[in-house]
Amino acid sequence: MESAKESHEKKLPSLVGAKMGKVVTRLPPEPSGYPHIGHAYAGFINWYYARKYKGQLILRFEDTNPRNVHEEYYEAFKDGYQWMDIEWDKELKVSDDLPYFYEKARELLNRGEAYFCSCEADDIKASRRTGTACSHRQTKSEDNLEIWDKIIDGNYAEGEIVCRLRIDMTHPNAVMRDPNIFRIIDYPHPIQKEKYRLWPTYDFANALEDHRNGISHVLRSNEFATRGELQAYIRDLFGFPQPLIQEWSRFAIEGSPVSKRKIRPLIESGFISGWDDIRLTTLLALRRRGIIPETIKEMTREVGLSVAQPVLDWSVLIGINRRLVDPIASRYYCVTSPVPVIIEDGKPTKAIIPFHPDFAERGTRTVTVEDRVFIDGQDAARLKKGDIFRLKHVFNLRVEKKTVKAISCVFAGDELDQAGLKIQWVTDDTVPVELRIPNVLFIKGELNSDSLQIIEGRGEAAIKDVKPESIIQLERKGFGFVDENGEKVNINMTE
RNA sequence: GUCCCUAUCGUCUAGCCUGGCCUAGGACACCGCCCUUUCACGGCGGCGACACGAGUUCAAAUCUCGUUGGGGACGCCA
Image (cartoon, chains in turn green, brown):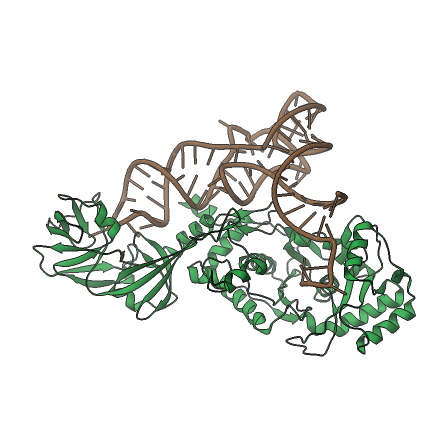
């Protein structure tokens, strides 16, 4: 028991170069969509180390592309982190720092470290592949500074010109081949409105913000690995110290896309219901599926700072969740394809059923069984004449006659047969239940037409009292999240 | 095409840096038994892996080279 418990308390490794009280990490979301499990994973790691070393965690919205950013997502991220119990110490928006970036950019222009380039985007791209420089590289500082002012004054249109760093067009790391650091975007920003039209690119903003925010450790997924060199170069340009960088591999869950590019068409076609569809891995979806935050944390500790390419199976997440949710989920009976069981010699009998087998303090409900109950069609199919089974928490019955429409039984004693068959049941007093059973969205890259199964059933009356958003267990069916509880109870099965 | 990262049970991961303690440990899944008024949780046991090929060494999962596979970058996205 102890060894099992210890193994569940797997810890993340110590952080290189971390000093107590001196660690500052960051949550750097772009508010352009809903947070998903990958954000929660990275968020938890950053939160974990900030707390472990009694440092600080900074929430920094990377909102430097007004075309991508929408106001609602700032809140969506905060909600997501809050749900994960990830608390941050300071909240910033990169878009608040444009004056700072402007000042730094002008300094670089003045020093000849940057220049404006009016080549076509495609030509710039091609020249990076071939490693050839364009004539704009030679523009004098004074002229570049003049162009800067003209852009601010509105003399250039979007797409007409960009500001690039003068590094090395033949650098082995293509990211270093004179990267763009500013571009014109004539589009209102949700926070800054129409105040700016010249926006810094990711690398420039990120490199300077990390220094400006006093970030000691940049903990991020390695899709940014090749940008590291550029970001370090930018900080070096100003003589800023370098934070320590720790990267891990971006992970995936088998059959569950994360990208907006893949998900949006599914929503538009109506294949899935929205960003909170229970087949997705957005935090909203996971919550509605009955996955709890602790499960995501546990999974993060398990996967750790791996640099391979983890592709997790849903069973890992679901298995961890089942263990964590077991003690908190009350048990209920629910039957699908109900088949009547006629108790020929039935007399009203009170069944007292506990809500949880291990915690008596969670209480019981009392149901009176008369001469008819319903059992699940699948259980009915297994019964044949002469079989003895127990109506769980009531008494034993013997099958006398079985027709396609009903099963007739007689009382067969009260003694509990430990090894005998026990069957869940409902009376006439039920509530309609809709079970939604999710499955993977994609199988081997193909959309899975069977990714959501909906089953109608009858739940015992006690389910009417379950608070929406509770996680319950339908005995022998599994755990689920009570999504709505009205005329009908919708339950999203975790699976 | 060029550059970077990576390769351990079905899946995830520990070990690799500092070679011997590894007949390779754990989690999830699966199978069996036990516990049990659930096919839940829990307990015990089982199945099950060092991608391949060379090399270095008394000794290699661990070091070197190559092959193959996987991921990422080469955006006026982040």
